[in-house]
Image (tube, rainbow, N blue to C red; front, top):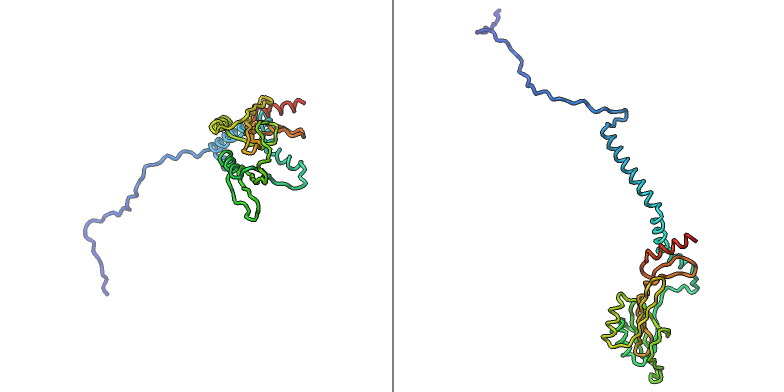
Length: 255
């Protein structure tokens, strides 16, 4: 029986483990103080800052809302926007009317009247039912129509030369009274000018005739507040005079 042996030549070497890489130590600061809820002190400070900010804003908003001026302003706008519906609800409308459709005018010459209402007042001719067996014309503008009817005896139609603001007429509102007056002068049309003053408000009026003597008025009547007889607050036709309305509200409050 043979025993195999292995001879190791040379001096024995000590086996050392592989060196472990060493890293520079990093300083870890202590964690911020925490409470049971787990919310840190810096977070609480931020929350507290926003809470104070919201609180101050709420107080300022509360003071503004309940100040006398804002209350009056709120009442004015409430009256302006809600008052129209209130009038509609309280007014009687037995025929359930919706709006004005047209007015009819008997004229000496349909062609001459068409020229006036189209070129002077800006109406647009529209198609007329062909089943009508009499001469006439339809025009449309500003939300309603004008129906012209040819007179059967044009020579006997009454002639009106004098401009009387108290006569029957239709009225149109305009943007600039000065431009209207200058245009009438360019057309060499006769007209009468009138001014109405009420409560510090000035309303200008221009009166003139159509070719058949029917009265036409151009005005800025939307400046004049609409005051219902039911004792409600004043409302303007198209815009609100805030100072006037606030003055009226204060008078009502004092009463």
